[in-house]
Structure formats: structure tokens, C-alpha cells
Image (cartoon, rainbow, N blue to C red; front, side, top):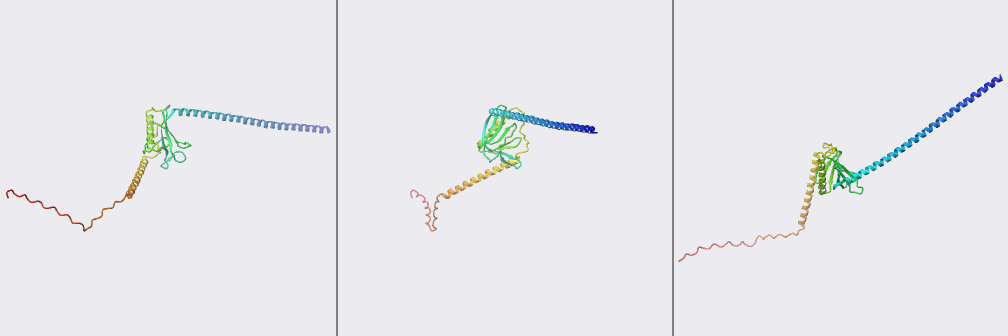
Length: 280
């Protein structure tokens, strides 16, 4: 009986030891799997980080290369471009929603130096305008295309339209307007004479900008304004003339003759009689 009990206890101890070993092995395996998973995650994060850094470095190099390419292209374009005319004008844009002209760019309205550049390498033209201020803000950079219509609405205001909007130039003087119109005519003539290079022509049926009725109304308003200024100038000259007349010395008028003046002079004497006859 005692031997049986001892054998049972030994068997139970052996089973307990085996169970403890099994649990220890399971715990060790779980810890090993956790460490392996952590190691794999750390390696994958490091790999992703390295890939992102390489991508950023390659993108940075690409931006540098593109920037260098743009700079070299800009230098080539600048070397191949030359200004054919320039004028002083205020650059305007037609607001189709409100039916009025608004100044281009930001800030207060001011004069700009507007130039027409000719690219001799591909025979293209563009209008570039910069404000005559310290910031030299670019208010217009409009390419000229074949078929563009240049409208001289008034001697000092010219306009044209491109694919997006309607541009207007309010020149500082008639001389500037005439000079710019000559340069624009020369550019459009060269574009018309050149063969078709695949650039789209200026859209003629563009649904923006002033209609012919609005242009006629603007022309009439400008004529009325000019007539009003002429009327004011005439009134000013008339006031000056009246002021000069009022300031001149007044010459006294001759006194009127009294009612009882000297008598009228006698009438002419009678004619003489006929001569005497001979031998009487």
C-alpha cells in the first residue's frame, strides 16, 4: 500500500513537472513570437522610412533639375525675345458679370509699362505689362495669336480679346496709343503672313466682353463727356472775356443836345439869271 502511494505521488510529480515544462515552453514560444513580430515591424518601418527618404531625395533632385531646366529655358527665351515697342498705359480687364472695366492686378490702379515682345526663334509675340512701381507687378502676359482682332475704341483706349477674357489699355497719351497700335499692327501682320504653326486662332464667337451695343454706348458716353468738357471750356472762356470787359475803362458818352439849340442854316442861294443879249 505504501509503495502504491509513493508510485502515485512520483507519477503526479512527473506530470506536474511535464506540465510546468509545457507551460514554460509555450510562454517561451509566445515571447519568441512577440520578439520576432516586433523585430519584423521595426525592420519594415526602417525600410519604409528609408524608401520615403529616398523618394524625397529623388523628388528634391527632380525639382532642382526642373528648376534648372526652367531657368535655362527662360534664359534661352529671354535671349531670343526682343521688345518691338513699349507704351505707358493702365491695363484693364472687362468684368462680364458686372458689365464694366476693372484694373488688372492687385492694389490701386496705376500706370504700367506695356511692351510687345517678339520671339525670333519661333516667330511668336506676347504682350507683357509691369506696373511702374517698386514691386513691378506683372499685370498682363498675353500671347498674340493669328486672327486676333485689335480694336481702337477711342484714340486713348484700345482693346482685344483672348481665349479667356477681354483686355483693355487706357494709354497716358495719344502718342503712346499710336505707337503701341503700330507695333500691334506689325505683329499681327507678321502672324498673318506666317504659315499656320498649329496654334489655335483667336476665338471670334467668344461669349465674353462688351457687345457691339455696349461698345456703341461707351463711345456715346465718351463723346458726351468730351462735349461736356468742351462746353465747360467755352463757358470758362466766356467768363474770362466778360471779366476782361468789366475791367476795361468806361468811355463817357457824348452829352445830348439841348432842345432850344441854334437855328438851322439858311438854304442855298437862287441860281443866277440868263446872260444879257448882245447889242441891247
